[in-house]
Length: 157
Image (cartoon, rainbow, N blue to C red):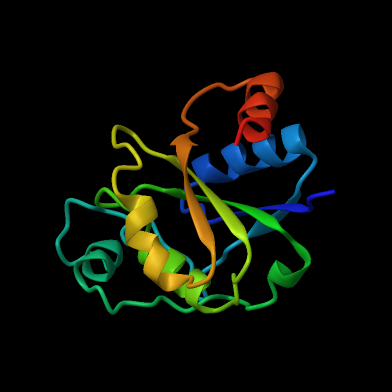
């Protein structure tokens, strides 16, 4: 039987809600990716070119530190990886997360939340950060989603 982890980063709580619903629907374990320094409201102001998130997303080498590196990746075959879309891709902390563990032989399915963007090229953007893993394009989990809908989506992958 395939063991599933739902790992997520949530800056404002929206992605956390989606991740919790997904984990419940698919009977997966839940793991929150936390930054060592939590993001403030000012840090997330995408209209401010000097905000923390803006600076991180402009710099491809940016790797915000994780609060911990204890994610139980080795014990899972399939990992649903969730995050808000920032600047049409995953936040820089997702690069940090992917580079902090060995995902060889794992299947990673992306899901995201956004006020208006899609996943776009996120899967291809992230592939280089987890060699040996298979990254699958997932879907946006905005708004309301039923347990049955989430379960059916996960089963059809």
